[in-house]
Each structure stands twice: as C-alpha cells, then as structure tokens.
Image (tube, rainbow, N blue to C red; front, side, top):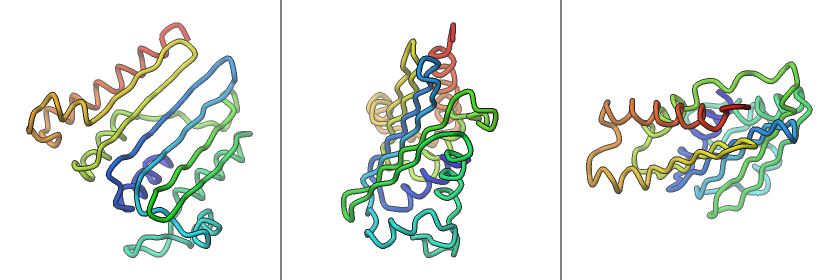
Length: 177
C-alpha cells in the first residue's frame, strides 16, 4: 500500500513515465525499492517537509501519508530512505528494508498494484522490474501498447492478463529462492 500511495503521487504529478523497481536479495539480506517519475518535481522547501504527513502537494486533500509511512517502515525495518526531486524534471524515491526483519510486511499483490496504477491513467508509460539474486522480471506498458496496436490497456481482459503476467513473472524470479 505504501508503494501504491507513492506511485499515485507520481501519477498526480503529471508524469509521462513512471519506473518501479524492486530488488529482493537473500545474499544482501535486503529488499530495495525505487519509484522514479518525470513529473513536475518538488521545490527544495516541499522536499524538506515531504515526510510530514500534513504536507502534500495535492489540492484534493490536506494530508499525505504515503511518504511518511514508507519512511517509518524503513526505519522500523533497519533500512534506508531517500527522496530527491527537481522542479520540472521529476522525483526519485528510494527505500530499503532488511529482508529478515520481523516487521517487514508481505509485498502483497504487485500485479494488482500495477494494474490499478495503469487504470489510474492509461496514457502514462510504466516500467516495472522485480529482481532477485537469480533472475529479473521486467514489464513495460510501452511494449504492451506497441503489441496491442491501438487497443486500450483498460480492456478488462488485458488488465487481468497484466495482473497475472506480472505476478507469474515475480514467482519465476523467486523459484529456488
């Protein structure tokens, strides 16, 4: 859910491209996540206050919990957290947690998360990757759009396929893990 909130921030920042990367490493005992967008970016003043739950760049509500919750999760799970942004260029959020920390929540349904993000704005191009010590799975809406040749990603059959395809790809990267 924390990742979904942050991706929604990227969507609301008028991004054209959003990159979501997750790396789960047994060898490093680490789960690393990053979300990068080419949206409107943030001023230095807003960036300094971004972890305050009562600070948000949105006009639709007065609180923004995604970033503060993600930072809290990384602190609770012996990880790291960093956000960088430049007005007019976009934002990059990086977070990590110690993989074997008892407080690390399950990842959840990442295929569902990406399906929901695509549904939020079909025009945005999403790149998603999930990497383990053994393999890497990559998904790109640009490639899917090219193959579909004008058919909307929002067709129910296509959305269901995207969800399944991503989840199956993640399972393959974890085989023998």
